[in-house]
Image (cartoon, rainbow, N blue to C red; front, side):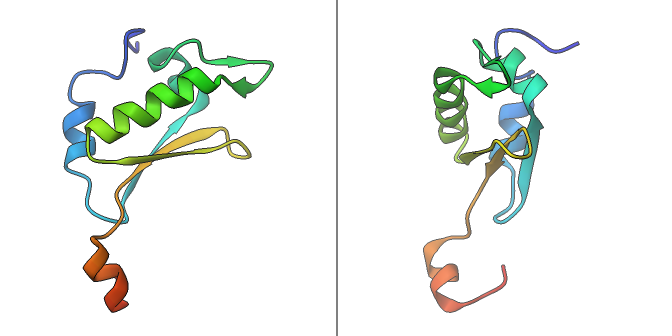
Length: 89
Protein backbone atom coordinates (compact mmCIF):
# COMPACT_ATOMS: atom_id res chain seq x y z
CA UNK A 1 0.00 0.00 0.00
CA UNK A 2 2.80 2.44 0.86
CA UNK A 3 6.18 2.61 -0.85
CA UNK A 4 9.19 1.45 1.13
CA UNK A 5 11.51 3.98 -0.49
CA UNK A 6 10.07 7.16 0.94
CA UNK A 7 6.75 8.95 0.93
CA UNK A 8 4.45 8.43 -2.05
CA UNK A 9 4.57 10.60 -5.10
CA UNK A 10 2.68 13.81 -4.47
CA UNK A 11 3.43 13.97 -0.73
CA UNK A 12 6.29 16.42 -1.29
CA UNK A 13 3.89 18.70 -3.21
CA UNK A 14 1.30 18.46 -0.41
CA UNK A 15 3.91 19.48 2.16
CA UNK A 16 5.13 22.27 -0.08
CA UNK A 17 1.60 23.63 -0.25
CA UNK A 18 0.90 23.51 3.49
CA UNK A 19 -0.27 26.81 4.89
CA UNK A 20 1.38 28.20 8.02
CA UNK A 21 0.09 26.59 11.23
CA UNK A 22 -1.41 23.68 9.31
CA UNK A 23 0.22 20.31 9.99
CA UNK A 24 0.40 16.87 8.44
CA UNK A 25 0.40 14.11 11.08
CA UNK A 26 1.93 10.76 10.06
CA UNK A 27 1.57 7.73 12.36
CA UNK A 28 4.58 5.61 13.35
CA UNK A 29 3.64 2.63 11.21
CA UNK A 30 3.74 4.82 8.10
CA UNK A 31 6.94 6.64 9.14
CA UNK A 32 8.59 3.23 9.53
CA UNK A 33 7.83 2.37 5.92
CA UNK A 34 8.89 5.73 4.53
CA UNK A 35 12.01 6.30 6.61
CA UNK A 36 13.73 3.02 7.52
CA UNK A 37 14.95 1.55 9.77
CA UNK A 38 11.80 2.60 11.62
CA UNK A 39 11.09 1.58 15.18
CA UNK A 40 12.56 -1.02 17.49
CA UNK A 41 10.76 -1.93 20.69
CA UNK A 42 8.31 0.89 20.04
CA UNK A 43 11.00 3.58 19.81
CA UNK A 44 11.61 5.34 16.50
CA UNK A 45 15.20 5.08 15.30
CA UNK A 46 17.20 8.33 15.38
CA UNK A 47 18.30 7.81 11.76
CA UNK A 48 14.67 7.50 10.65
CA UNK A 49 13.75 10.72 12.45
CA UNK A 50 16.77 12.50 10.97
CA UNK A 51 15.69 11.35 7.49
CA UNK A 52 12.12 12.56 8.08
CA UNK A 53 13.43 15.91 9.33
CA UNK A 54 15.64 16.27 6.23
CA UNK A 55 12.74 15.34 3.94
CA UNK A 56 10.56 17.97 5.60
CA UNK A 57 13.28 20.60 5.20
CA UNK A 58 13.46 19.85 1.46
CA UNK A 59 9.74 20.62 1.33
CA UNK A 60 10.05 23.82 3.34
CA UNK A 61 8.61 22.21 6.47
CA UNK A 62 9.71 21.52 9.99
CA UNK A 63 9.34 18.06 11.48
CA UNK A 64 8.56 17.14 15.07
CA UNK A 65 8.18 13.71 16.56
CA UNK A 66 5.57 13.15 19.25
CA UNK A 67 6.60 9.92 20.95
CA UNK A 68 3.66 10.01 23.36
CA UNK A 69 1.27 10.04 20.40
CA UNK A 70 3.36 7.78 18.15
CA UNK A 71 3.40 10.15 15.20
CA UNK A 72 5.55 12.54 13.27
CA UNK A 73 4.30 16.02 12.38
CA UNK A 74 5.34 18.00 9.33
CA UNK A 75 4.50 21.68 9.80
CA UNK A 76 5.11 25.22 8.62
CA UNK A 77 5.45 28.10 11.02
CA UNK A 78 4.06 31.53 10.14
CA UNK A 79 6.61 33.99 8.75
CA UNK A 80 8.57 35.77 11.48
CA UNK A 81 6.96 39.14 10.78
CA UNK A 82 3.52 37.64 11.39
CA UNK A 83 4.58 35.83 14.58
CA UNK A 84 6.02 39.02 16.06
CA UNK A 85 2.93 41.03 15.17
CA UNK A 86 0.74 38.72 17.28
CA UNK A 87 -1.45 37.68 14.36
CA UNK A 88 -3.44 34.47 14.53
CA UNK A 89 -2.45 33.57 10.97
